[in-house]
Image 1: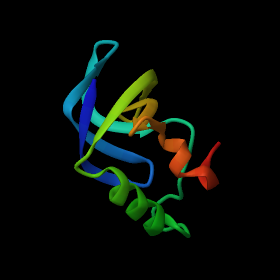
Image 2: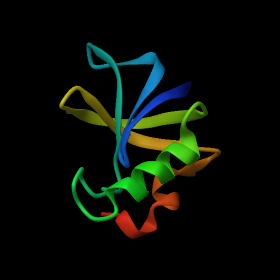
Image 3: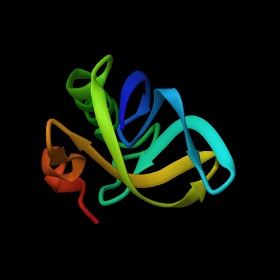
Image 4: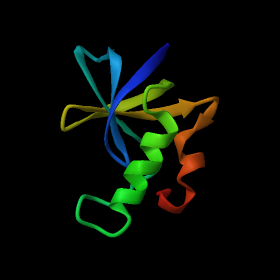
Length: 94
């Protein structure tokens, strides 16, 4: 299923519509697994957030392999145009 990205929170958190449903929960926040960008106040935070925004804001992504919930965010693999988001953020892979 495809989800439209409606808001970028930071370089590795965003919101989608429609809401996702997983394991009895639902929501709109996504935390992709496989990479981790700098937190607010850290070096390169703004750059990573802008990169994610330029890449997927108002575009469609595919959510795969849900792994759990963290702070009301679905932890999952995210694919954009057939590529895992980690492809676009190799310097932040974990």
